[in-house]
Image (cartoon, rainbow, N blue to C red; front, side):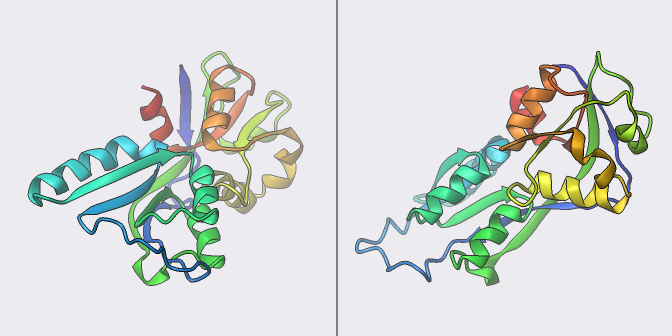
Length: 210
């Protein structure tokens, strides 16, 4: 994978990494409570390596306590929670996914915390046309822009807001090659199926791919 990226702007949206305790106001309490010494965490796959390292330190400092991590695409983890899964913690990038769980009554909003942030950047495969500035997205040289769905994924939502603030959204909307997730959009970009895309900066998905 060989991508080249450039920050959209230093003042664009910061994207929080949100950790929130999951509550079940719309579901009956489980008949058999889980092991109080085991914390179950649903973690966005891009964040799993960092969270795993942090959990290792927690377990070392708290003998007898352990953390069980299940990682995956944030949207898939949301569907599991909606279907009845009850992790103690849900950790994702941005607030589209956690906001959905809040609106549906699955989260204890008093426990929601922001523990980090990402910027946004434009990216392109090395063989594709250069991107000197965001306005280049509207040029004829850029025919396809890979991006995850807005309103469903945090990256898609934040990218839409950023492009809209710069007056570019209406100019590039017809060029969008929308994907279900950030990982799918990044894969399309890496294969050269799109001329440009929007990623987080630093991009945890790139670190995941190595």
